[in-house]
Image (cartoon, rainbow, N blue to C red; front, side, top):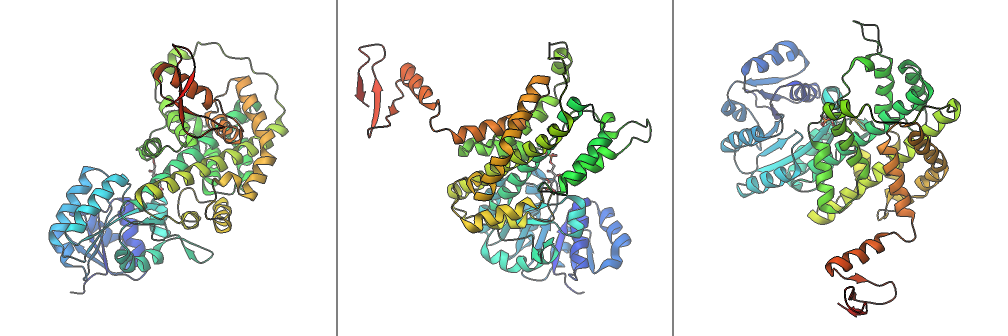
Length: 474
Ligand code: 6PG
């Protein structure tokens, strides 16, 4: 029997499509699934696309791989992943590679990588973005793990990844959990992007009385400019959809409760640990949480709100476009800050420009915009924040008056825009010469003798608040 170049275990939609993508690129692919029916169905339906080597048992699956073995696990992230890793690792030898292509938490990936490294097995936590279609036609791939594993896997992953201007959307992100961390931040930004799009839609619909179909046209127009991106493109598709059963806009028959599998929440949890303000992502996670409290929403419906009053249509559409663009710049700036902070914390040496490069195609947040981010890091790899890159600074300068009008209008007519508002507050916060954090420091010193620094002298100080109010070095 000919041995396979690489294997995929876990043949639900993502795993099946990834296996097909590999086979279509000429690799002999070992395939395995806990229930063998999926394995057989894959070979039956798509066997003609390339060479598949099916196995019903894990031992046969591992035995069907060329050495050093390369096996990709495509199972739902969680405890199940550990079980599959243990099963494969027990059958493998030093030098073999296990790739986890699920949305695992990066700390789990760090733990798994360290444990397998002890046994000489390379563990690669690889973020894979692009959904079912991406897995089949070319995803964006974010692998972590050792340099040796990248040598053996890199050419294959770059082969099956999306390409933009001939450049593959796959790069070695960094050691241990770096790949899954970057995928997590990708998802956090995905949450933020979608929240901002949803706010744009909501505000225009409420303020102008526009129909979803009207707004589909607006988004289609926006997709021809600087907002050109996959999510804007599919927003137009979803808004245009008409429910066959009722004839109503599709978006009006969907329950308005946004679910989440957890990667956005993880991004915010990690950002809290790292001390990086990812307010755009946090607002998006909390907006989903708010949507998921029907009892509070039902009770609150009777609370007083403003009466809608006339808003000029033409200007508002352009203002919202500007607010969306400016808020998006903030969300990405925050996400890139978080990657930079994690890189320092975990010693990953992340190349931020390369992250922008592999997000240009294949993934959910793919957008023209990523080219500009890459250019910003090419011009200055040590940029303190993306906001001050000359291109983005100029765009924010153009957008900011519109942005303020949008937030003001939203507040005036009672439409919640937490994404727009908090992004603007972040922008204004960073711009400030002096922040009221000085007063917070004073209060902390007053009640807890927590001390403070002075603008004009070195060292920490404490004021004797209950006593003579004299200041002493701490
Ligand atoms: C991707 C997507 C993918 C998944 C999200 C959905 O990059 O292909 O991000 O990973 O669709 O995890 O996340 P929520 O269910 O949390 O919205």
